[in-house]
Image 1 (cartoon, helix red, strand yellow):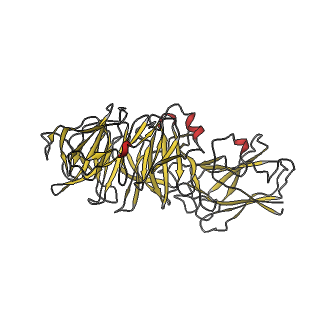
Image 2 (cartoon, one colour; image 1 turned 90 degrees about the vertical axis):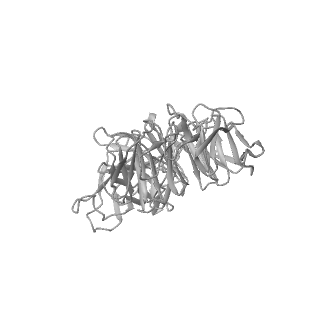
Image 3 (cartoon, rainbow, N blue to C red; image 1 turned 60 degrees about the vertical axis):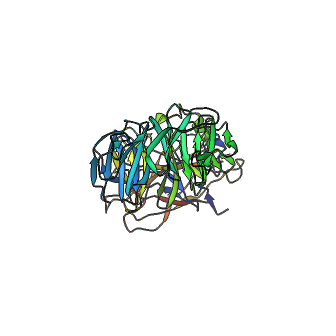
Length: 482
């Protein structure tokens, strides 16, 4: 066997790592593409500093207005251009440290953005101050507004809200989000408290800790909603009120009460978290888990943040693989939660914006950013225990070569050459020392790199490769020559 390719397959975390052969043990701060090449993830650069030095609890981009709205420390801010120019929207404030949900609603010739964060709905018309929905607001409230609202959707011209610690959900007058009647409400089928409210294409889901009810239109103006044949998914309730996403209006992915990542589609649901269920089961808590989708260079990812344990798991919709992403601390050499707390796509500006977990800043995700606003990403990959079919015979490669993207240089430098670090271990014993492999200066695009010129014999071997520099990194393949 003159040359043998080392498999760089999507990782699997649900088994003991010693059983992994062609499957990677770890993909950290990167992803595996359709041709089994490892890519360091995109970094980000500063887009706008809100000045709160606090978590950004929600971001929303209005296509009609061409403006981005962000909420941090209870205050509302508006970004008015692609360069991050910020305007403070004065007026009423939302509760601090509560996740914000948005809904845009046209009424009376104006465009309003409604916001809730365990609160009475608040709104702005993108020009005036923020106002709490009340009899003295402009427009004024007619009737009684819901309070302590955690989730809000618009469904066929009705604004629908669920309240914390309540088994009921309420809806506005059709076409008028400023008119509410106390009796216009429904209860969950099993009387459990509502934990989440999510909109689909032709129905919406009302979720508790133990069940999910499916509701749709009834066609009756006085009784507008119907839970189709009392449709319900039993025993698969939510583990966290905000660890859920809806895709294309037809599928809902969420963390269920048993800490499984489940996808609900039509009348069926599947466990889609087999590769990471063990990791999630061993977390200290999932009650504060948060899920949202992001897009980077046309590639869709599901982000799963677990703040208490400072861990982030990422699901790649294309490869159907899970990765671990993080924020790297160069001083302490430790990883923590990936800094994205929320996300929106500003389509008018073609910018992908994330809100930070604690510093009040908005960042732009960009494949041309090779650091996290100047901080090292430190991407790494660990292969499986390569044995070419058997641990029973010795293998001794003459050399190890790789196909690696080269010639891009380091971020912020036209002269420095980036490097990768590589080490290996045999039969799951101690790792060798890291060895540096230079990737060449700008313009040196020869992608053939020699990782080792000679190797000791082994029965099984793992490789561990890191990118410690602020540079682009694509590892297409590793081959051993025998």
